[in-house]
Length: 170
Image (cartoon, rainbow, N blue to C red):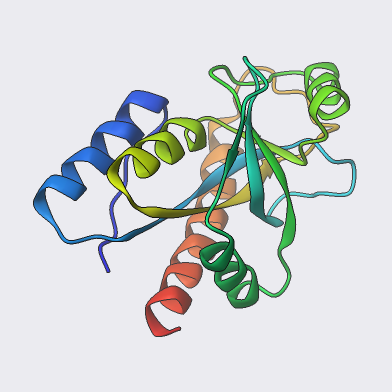
C-alpha cells in the first residue's frame, strides 16, 4: 500500500495518480479527505463513503468500485453511504449547499473525486472515495478563522490516519 497526499484540486489529484501508476504497482485507489456536508443530518467529523460521484458541473455520474467501497464502508462502521458531488469551486453558503443537495441528491461535496475516478478508470485501477465533513450544510463559510480551521483539519487528519491504518490492517 502506498500513502500519498495531493493537496486541493483536480489537476494535483490526477497528476499524483498518474505518477503513482507509472512508478508503482498500485491496483486500487482510496481517495480520502475533506468535504462539505450537503445532507442536513451530517455534522463535522462524520464520514461519507461514496456510492457514486456526480460531477456538479455536468451531472455526469461516475461509479466507484463496489467491492472496494463496501470494504471501506465495513472498516468505517459509522460511515454514511451516499452520492458525493465533485465541484470545481468551494461552496461558501448554506444556500449553495442546499441547491446542490436539492439538484443532485448528493450528501457531501468535494473537489477531486471526478478527475481521480476518471484517471483510475483510464489506468485500469479500482477506486473508492471516503470524505470527512469539514463544514456542515447549514454553515456559511465567511472569512476564514485559521485557528478553527487548523483545529478542524487536525481532527480530520487523525480520522484519515485511523482509516488508513484500518485499510492496511484489513
